[in-house]
Length: 89
Image 1 (cartoon, one colour):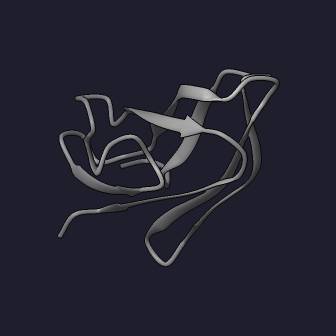
Image 2: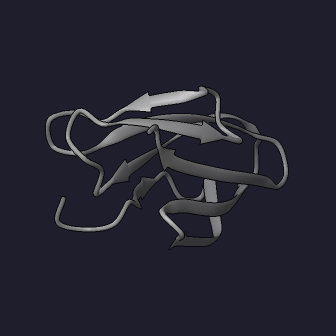
């Protein structure tokens, strides 16, 4: 892993990132929808290839990174969403 987990893609203006920080082995972000709420996707990079990660505040409870250390995460945005991602131990 060359970088800490981070949001590498979010479709602006559909997904608005108010903050995103990697602290205590967790990626934490505050997200809002743009003009319309609904199911959106963000891409997380800097993950361990093939690693399993728990997600809070997402449309899935767990994500698995691909061979390049990326994972596409579905998120239902309708106002403020507190998102958290951390490696499953």
